[in-house]
Image 1 (cartoon, rainbow, N blue to C red):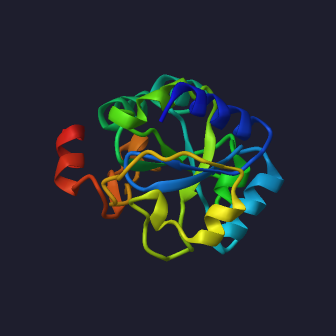
Image 2: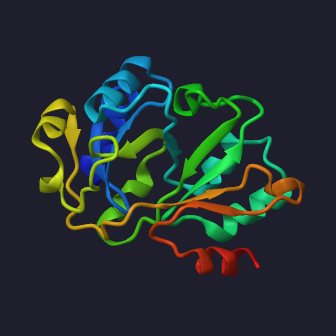
Image 3: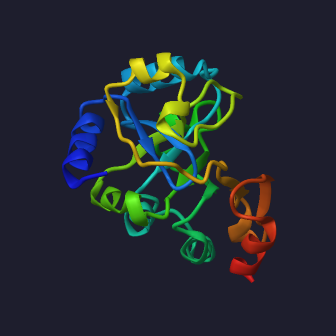
Length: 203
């Protein structure tokens, strides 16, 4: 993955295009979180029900925290301990930011900040958030290689970024929606980061 390719990715997202790209877990689809057309196209490619939420991915943790000023200090500390990494964090969203990503749950937001090492390092230049979901049919197997993505999904996107072979295990989903007020950090989907590692990071 080159800097020029990442610049093209930035431009694609800026105009509401749909991109197929590599993350630190599996291949994903991305579009601008405020583009209704882009989100409709992404969901249609995945055959994903429109009431199901997606995640918003930032490529820099500092930008993510700045974009969510309502987060309390305890939650911010947790994010700094957990991210970047292969975790999708569910957060309270009282300001109802990124409504297209939240779908039927406007006061809860899924956040991803991937670890950008090796082949993925150029993605650190992406300066905008994206609405992101895995590049598969809803409920289907995750794609570890670009060639694992179904041909009609590949044909339906505006840009493909090949990041080589990926780990192939989806992100762990961690619910922090009540964490600020003394609630638990609850793993709601097992994934790339074991529950024991999550607990150790937050201890």
